[in-house]
Length: 249
Image 1 (cartoon, one colour):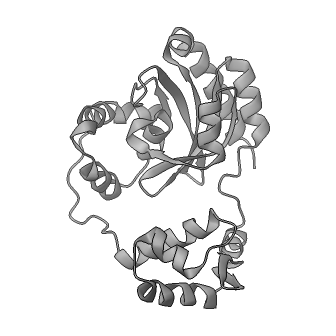
Image 2 (cartoon, rainbow, N blue to C red):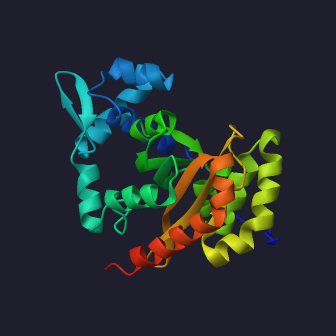
């Protein structure tokens, strides 16, 4: 089991940063929102939201037309400056091939956004998973195999701070994760951790690395009774595909 010493300093959340991030995500999920609607969604006074929204418009992160706010150009420009998308090595066809080869109900590409995991691409015959992916719903990192892969690469202080936020209902998941941490870091693979709220569904996931860091995870997800008997072949498929992804430029 990996030993994790409490770091001397953990990253503290910042109320204003959290509110700015919430505004950007809220607007990005909409076709345009009024100031009143934004304030209502945030459960905050219009007066306290007005200054933040004005600042985001002035900096190009939001665009205002007819008193409605939409995402501006600045977020796209920052990604352009970085010279990459969220994940460069994986394309949709990779998930299609993996889905067909493993005979699973779902193949997903997942990233961590704050304390959550989000499926940013998928190939699925399961309407439930497809709905989660297409709506970019947030899921708990500690309750998904892809989440375990992503968490294993976090800096000590960030990992400890995240684990400290979890409630008693996740205590057994935390214990299992920590006991598996060394193995995940060594292999980049998580096999059937049994973490989901729906115990009939489980997953096998591998890390996607860019510039030496884990930037995403690819997971094969489906009913446990179907995946468990084929776990060895699924792991082999994922690791073989992973080698090909990491040989890309």
